[in-house]
Amino acid sequence: MIYEDEAILVLDKPVGISVMGERHDTDLVTLAGDDGEELFPVHRIDKVTSGLVLFARQLRFHGDLTRQFQRRTVDKRYLVLTRTRGLPASGTVDLPLSVGRKSRVRVAANRADIMADLAEVAPLAEVADLGEVAPLAEVAPLAEVADLGEVAPLAEVADLGEAAPLAEAARAEVGPTGAGAGVGRWTVPPAAVFPHVRTYPSVTTFIRVWEGGEYTLLAVTPVSGRRHQIRVHLAWIGHPIEGDPLFGRDATARTLLHSWRLAFDAAWAGGSRIEVEAPPGADFWAPVRTHLPAGLAATLLGNVAGGSGIGGFA
Image 1: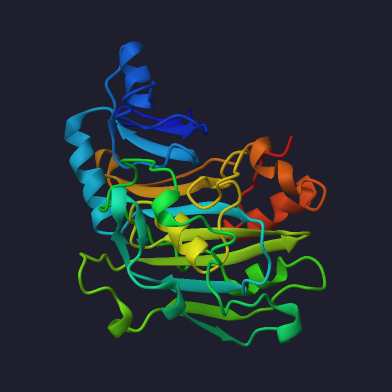
Image 2: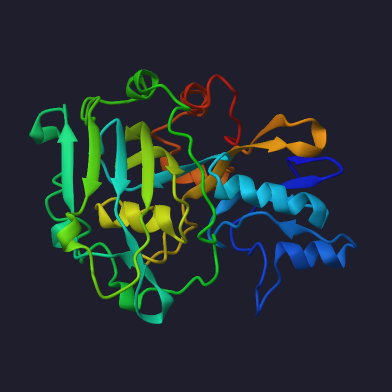
């Protein structure tokens, strides 16, 4: 447990358990019920994702909290590790989503139509080629990936665009082959958006916190909060989340996506702002432990978080 009062409960969900609605296994709501407490989820995160989940303890508090998500007044930020290099210091992925066969989420356009606008980036020799977005050799066809079901309703939103100064994020780079203090934007022309399906405007922003070895650490904000949005957006620009079963058929380790920070207004406490944070566990850091010492990780994430300390490195 991260935080509780008479109105809410904030839990640090481990990987491998659903928030609610699990048909063949247990979930957090069921576990709470078995322990004698009824919880009302305000939002959801994927079963393969770890980190913060907010619950209301009574229905009378639930409505106001869900409306904050709908109005985009909730601050929400995730941490991501990709097994790629070459992303700029910050970026915006503005790609509409749609639901394809078997209810699987995808970008509502062809990969070849995605345009990458990378400004003020380091020499091209040091930057990964984004010309072919999400090569099929690295990303499983959407028709063949696992369906993770009902996660992250479309009403979920978060906007932390101003939370971490870009100058601080740029200084976080480690090693001589970083992509520099560039800014990237990925879009598709309106004419290329599929006209035959319902589409959902979707925006994800990120700050590159660190890169070293084969890996990049990102602080990511799903501005529009669609189902699987972060996972789909990063994969379709060629930087899938490490361990994501949606885009890697041989994924065996945990998905390196963590719900890190959350801030919302407490109407039951005079409108005060509640800010909570859950550091990733040691399993999240395991692939980069030899490249990213514990002290450096704490410093970098502290910069992004505005000075708060970070644990999770055993």
